[in-house]
Image (cartoon, rainbow, N blue to C red; front, top):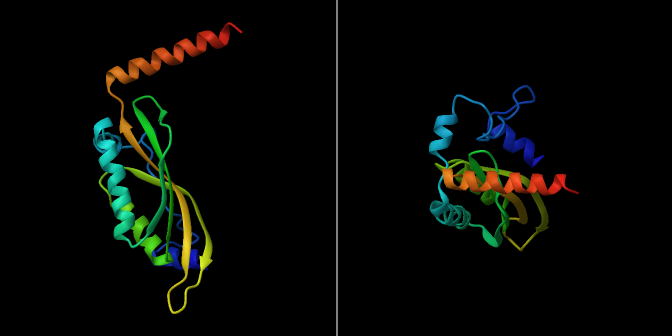
Length: 160
């Protein structure tokens, strides 16, 4: 029911599914803009701190914020982060909205809401988990190194 209310607030109906999240590998007229939105290596800590700050600004208690191993693509790396927060439904909604408004590309998925806790005279507290994935630009040196590593693995795999 809450999902239906949230969808209605966003103006979504069964006939108008939500837009697919932008992914930098998708051929699209927005690709030049997307590349400009890809931070480089030294900007990732600031971006992750910004996501964490947005959670706190939304009134959420951060229970886990763990960066996972990067996945390399042609010209970018996916930087996944596991997030576990506690707060009300509206605080979680505010967090997702603020993440969507960031100038950098951040996709949020694998959303799970559980463990509703009712505290006397307070809104229901929920434990929400999600995976936030941002992307960073790979410079030419990194792309060459990754290409060589992949070629080496392919050769080793063919010798077995």
